[in-house]
Amino acid sequence: MASPPTIVPRRDGGSVAVIGLGRFGSAVATSLLHLGHEVLGVDENPDIVQRWADRLTHVVQADSTSTEALRQLGLDDSAHAVVGIGTDIEASVLTVLALEELGVPDIWAKATSIKHGRILERTGAHHVVYPEAAMGERVAHMVTGKMIDFIEFDDGFAIAKTQAPREAAGKTLSESALRTRYGITIVGLKRGRNDFAYARADTLVEDGDVLIVSGPTTLVEKFAAIS
Image (spheres, rainbow, N blue to C red):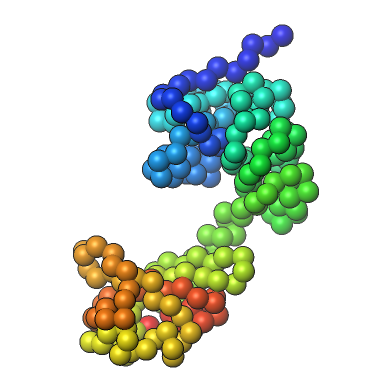
């Protein structure tokens, strides 16, 4: 009988499981660490496990498609798991199925296509992420418009970073009435090297300022186009 996977500990505490430490999984794991979470990284490649051994809270070499292997790692007590496996669709689906069988209440999974995503959802994933498609959309908005960054949510809501329009320069947000005129909300403002500032009615906008804008996607796009 094969011995159970060995965890390489770095510090104690609970963790979010990230399975598959490729480009996507490692980026998620790193971001979770920066946000203050402890991360249990799982990958079947020993070289990848060794590479991340001194960076993540715990790193494990294991077959994530095995329900029993994941149970031995304590994932049946985990609240969150992220499946970053993309190229091996069978392993991706079987890993989600194993997590679902263990009763993990919050399963995130990377999909490489719409069909792959549908299979993941039917298998038990609660959230399916399409990183390539999402990045493609962000780049398209930034290339064709005047946005510096753009994020769209599933319900038609978006947040964008864009240059302040000339018509707002030298006026407070109350005086320019951008929200009333364009149906968007100015969340904050960034000026040069100064710290980000939350927007208020008396916030003065100057030429060259960068605005953080939120609202319905179509209205955010229209606002960015006039900036």
